[in-house]
Image: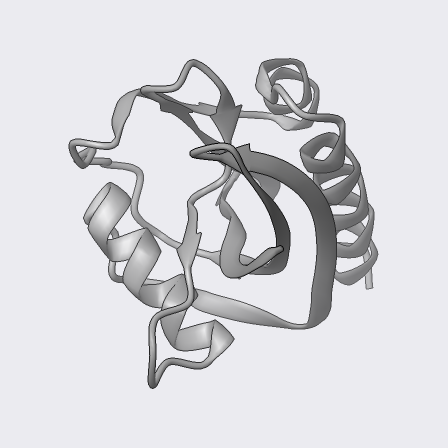
Length: 141
């Protein structure tokens, strides 16, 4: 079985003290967060910064300390079973302009409910719920 590790981010910006989340539409048809494979010599956070920059042209990113979530699943690639682990961080930006990479068709900035409805996978919905709850705890203190 093949092993694959990726890292990504629940990326948000604040608008009137309300988090607005970025969701990307991938060519494969699903909506998800910016993420990608961890390359040799990279740690998780450097991968997340690189992937956000490559996929959105956003380079103004601040990680929110204390939020790190992991999902794992199996899928098939070229007939072989792959065990994939994806680690997600919560990251803030002040940018709202997105320039998509060749990997994506579209993007949306949305409040929690809108972002949740866009996401395709249940694992991603769980990550967004956790991130939103974590962030609201910080914003209210």
